[in-house]
Length: 155
Image (cartoon, rainbow, N blue to C red; front, side, top):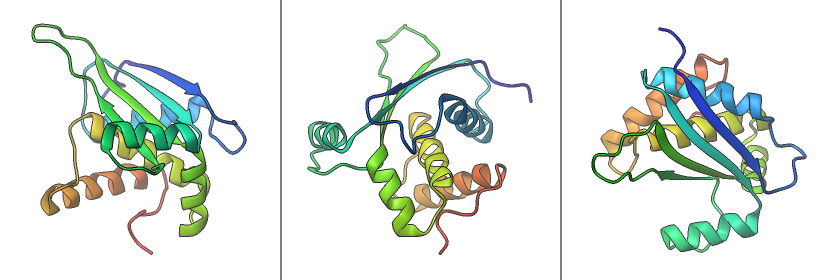
């Protein structure tokens, strides 16, 4: 399968120390798109935030007053409008870093997992119901394995 045309914007609104570069995010997004068998042109943005912004967004959009690792904002286009835009991801750098340490994972592997996880949400995957969760986790695990990353749900 040929590569899916991808337009990706990565914005850094948090200190960059320990945060992957734009080419890494591109690699992970492309892997998620391939794994989900998306063949259409795709556009999305990723915003890397600090705890304060992550908490505010999680509170305002999900009603949960804490910073979380990744938030997905799928695009909602008006009827009749077709664009390659699938939405936006917000990744909270301090939370991802802390989780990697707590879970004994390589930081880069956890960043890759959070990126893949978020992209799959933008493509309509979810993990609210048990069956959906199993399917999404299995797909994430396959995508990450293709990049040499261990199953994030084991251990």
